[in-house]
Amino acid sequence: MISRFFKISSAFLILLCVLACSNPKQETATLLIYGGTIYTVDSISVTVEAVATKDNKILFAGSLEEAETYKNEQTKLIDLKGKTMTPGLIEGHGHFMGLGYNELNLDLMNTTSYQAIVDAVAERVKTAQPGEWIVGRGWHQSKWDSMPAETVHGFQTHHLLSEVSPENPVYLKHASGHAGFANAKAMEIAGLQNLALDGVKKYEVEGGEVLVDASGRPTGVFNERAQTLITQHIPEKTPESDAKAFQLAVEACHKNGITSFHDAGIGRETIALYEKMKSEGKMHTRIYAMLTGWEKDLLNDWYKKGIMVDDDHLFTIRSVKLNCDGALGSRGAWLLEPYSDRPDHFGHETLPMEFVKETSLNGLKHGFQVCAHAIGDRANREILDRYEMAFKELPDMANDHRFRIEHAQHLHPEDIPRFAELNVIPAMQAVHMSSDRPWAIDRLGEKRIKEGAYMWQDLLQSGVPIVNGTDVPVEPINPIASFYASVSRKTLKGTPEGGYEPEQKMTRAQALKSYTLDAAYGAFEDHIKGSISAGKLADFTIYDQDIMTVAEEKILDTKVVMTIFDGKVVYDNKK
Image (cartoon, rainbow, N blue to C red; front, top):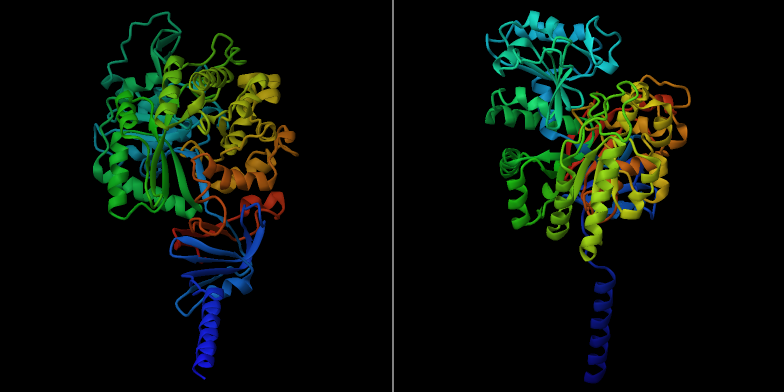
């Protein structure tokens, strides 16, 4: 009898163990999202019915029936009601504090003439104190409806601006950031109005130039590194203005569905600001920061310290930004052949190529990614050459370098396959094509445009991913505009019919991936974000219509209606 009792008891215990092992305690979700089209950018499943998250991580992505098993009475529910969700969008190349300060300073992004700039400054003068600097950004002479009567090398002169601001120094950055426009008062403060340049048509400084008129007097336009002649006299920003600009940048990201931001070049003060914002719990956008290559001491300090990747993935430093040439709009991009509309000019090498090689070797030795700005075909070639030299010199350290070229806007056809051969990532802002292509042909001519400008599909087919973005504040941060440019190759006005060089269009799947998983890959973060997969961070963007299927002409009507960051709703447009 006792023996039989023990047998039954043992069998019962075994059954309990089996049941316990086969029915582990189910985790419960803090958030359940369902009721719309959810694009995962995951190779296993293109779309899912529902996503369950726990705190800031994705718990499950799949069928609604299975997702509901993670639900309890505390789980927050979000019914998409037919809307569309993707992984949180990643701004793959921008300037975070530039975005914030563009909100604070004079925003000239939408000006369509020189007179509009003059009028904007005149209005600001009314509320400014005498002697107070007026600064702004966003003008672009190639996008104006008309040009003023007086120009030098295609740029306006300062006289009209100076007339409306006699007591206030003014400095207005070009949209590209690679040139600036000063009034007479600013040049007086800088000691530049009386330059003895009679008969000289341009005044060059290392890595830039001051444009002058026929009599040798400065026109007010300062190109590339010559900008420092003026900017060194502009008062420093204050801690209060920095904090305000930071908060405005975070809010702009949320409104546009941006949950991560690749910040292209920051120095010590900005690093300190970001650390302060994070310690105060205000870092509500994930920042992947590139150290500015202008500060060699800063780089050397970080080579000693090593990369910084925190556990919560809010603020990461593991890359270096090198500015190696200028922009096409200011004719600063470094070209193999001269500009079609300025035959004596090849652009500017703004950083010695020997330093690019030195930085590439240091990057490999210390685990830092190198991200080099290059727009012109010569700059791209020279940088690829220096990267290749470094890889050959330190082959054992170059296995997963993920070095990037920022912009890669104009390439010689022979250099296009080299990106894949060297595993170099092009970080290209599709909206630049939309904004620049109508006038870029004047700079480069038809042959160079068609064979080597904005070569997205050729690069993708060669086997490299593309990191997308806007280069904000060069362009507005709006990712919908860049997505539209990616798939249409048109201006934001919808021209031309069929798009510019339509064979280089991205598919919609490629465009979405360039803003999510490929952008994450470009920051060594594809294992934690960029797709909607279990275990990854709970960052999502929700739209009022399906960007993957809506008619092309309606893409630009798309609105971001909700942004979820770190498992929490940080933006909700209920209108």
